[in-house]
Image (cartoon, rainbow, N blue to C red; front, side, top):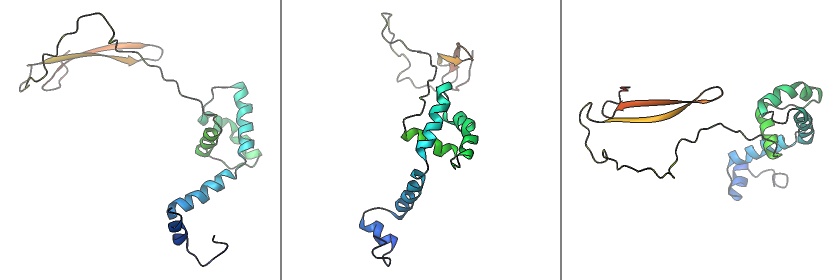
Length: 155
């Protein structure tokens, strides 16, 4: 459009198409990003992942940095992440977790006797809970008894 009528402003053009100036310039920048040789990048990533299939973006970037320089590819870690994302090459994170609640048990369930109670002094109600603390290779239990009024840990 700008090549047809060089007098028309970017503001008018973006308004005509219901877009913003910021969106227009972002798209220009994004199109520049697409010009990067993403096929070569994907090829380098696949070659590296052949030996280390679970390698994440940060380590991949550091391992491939010298190869990017040799191939004259200017790319940073975040752009590499975008290329991997567009190519479905990102590795999903798997977090360890402990299943802490089993609501499908046959044990008796007690009513909440504190619900609706106005707690106005210390040592009126104590509450306790168990939580799991993640260690290097396992989990540990942490049980606390807390004063409901002062939030002070008693035991």
